[in-house]
Image (cartoon, rainbow, N blue to C red):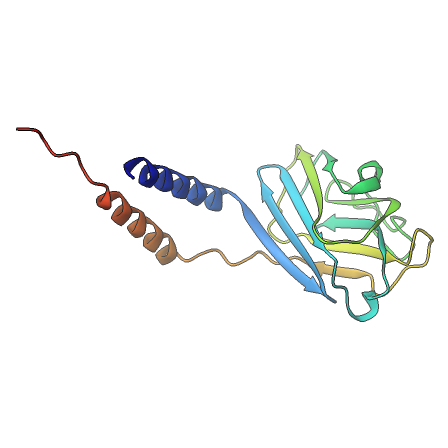
Length: 194
């Protein structure tokens, strides 16, 4: 039992450390949830699109996405993506209804586009940034959804900031640490032999 409690304490402290270093934000629009999270220079964007509504209900694929208002950077790679999106092309141009063909945002925004991929639940894109001074606290996201692999865009072009999720209050951390201390106090100490 003592080993189990120690492992629980260690796991809880590691989780507390991870909560302190990682950040996340969430945006929901027409039944699609966009979640951004980051640690260090890696930004992860998860798209949960299994329950589309409104004018996105008929969308079946995604063909482009843009992130801007993320500070400055020297380079970026799409280090992980679902399906054919791993081969998408990077542009510093603005995403508009026709793809990544708008004005340039060199060093402060990125636009990836290419072969359309099927919309589904838990689509994860990971971007790794190099150089500059990135700021992922409230990235501006734009996406183009389509009907099939053709060029017919479906619904509105999303253009919204993903707000930073609320950070737990210091009292929440104090309660967690207090609970951990109580668990630690419950560990039976071996009795001394006479």
